[in-house]
Amino acid sequence: MFPVTAGPEVKPADIRRILFLGNSITLHGPKADIGWTGNWGMAASSKDKDYVHLVTHALAEHTGATPEIMVRNIADFERNYATYDIDGQTKDLFAFDPDLVVLAIGENVPALVSDEAKTQFTAGVMSLLRCALAKRHPLVVVRSCFWPDAAKDEVLRAACQEANGIFVDAGPLGRDPANAARSERTFAQDGVAGHPGDRGMKALADAIVQAVLKR
Image 1 (spheres, rainbow, N blue to C red):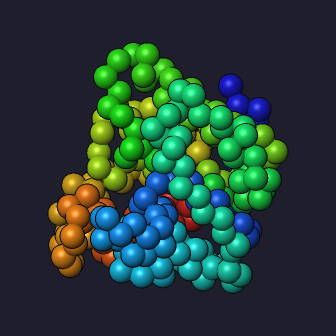
Image 2: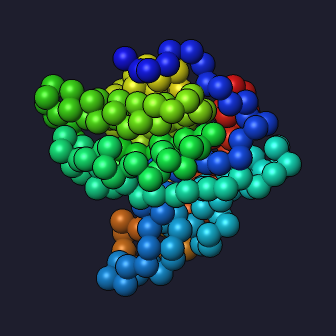
């Protein structure tokens, strides 16, 4: 159970600090061997076109103040969710005291082929959300996998509901080939090309912002 079962204490108009937790779609530094030179969400053409900065800009227009943001790639959690030191690795993140937490993970989680794996992944996601809600009750958005995966998305949706968060189903966006970066330009590595391009990033950002503003 979570420490607080009531709804969020923050209204969308009051968002001043946003914490983005994700993987390469959220933030990836330069990596020459895959042909990626950016230091933002792969594979947007520039920083201002990744979903993190599009969400930030859209909410700034709504609130009249540009939110301070903290962005962290937690792909290590995805790959090692059963043993990841959540308290130790996220202490500085939640000390940021965000008004909005966007959790956008799942793509790097190994296939959940056993009940034990599902249970452990559920426990890991719940622990992340407990940390997010330990101090107060910010707005929480949990996004499904961009590349849909029924087992992972079921865990993410259930944890989000338990935390009284806002679930954003990105599956339909990921299924649209036009949202992949390969539809916009050529990449040296196919894995990079499969990430959301500028159109996909905008679609993700629009879905998140619309869900937040409806709260």
